Length: 187
Image 1: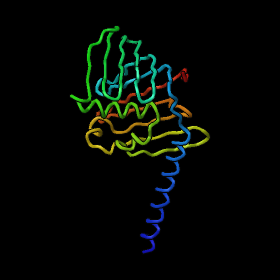
Image 2: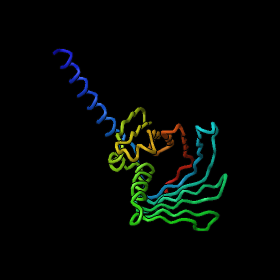
Image 3: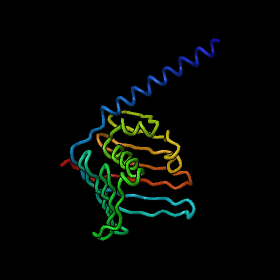
Image 4: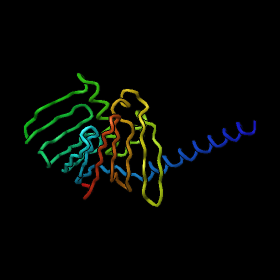
């Protein structure tokens, strides 16, 4: 009986610490109205045992639009709004997806906006979020609670200070995508 009681106490304490860390994370992170910067991305492809590197720039207007412009190795742009996803190759639109006809667009948009703009309440709808906060730095681990998302993502780690600085995405087949942000500027 004593071990059961101790187990219950430890569980309650760990839930309390988790809630406090998530509250600290929410208080520390900032989502300005507009933000721009550069990114470098490395995608490890497990089956090929190789990595593909890319880099570019991004900007967002909170709750309205994220533009992700890959400059190398190919010039492509993804423009994401809460309802649409547009793809451009060398400035020419090659694809348009709309959440009215493709519900996956709404989920992808929610998650991408949530990650890029520190909207933890949105991310909590799709992931179990655990957080560590220390000396103005933070790390959040997101594990899917939705089995459909879990089919594509094992977990996501996010790291930063006032702003998001790094994303690491772990996929079920062993692929890993790591993105680092730099030259962040509020507009």
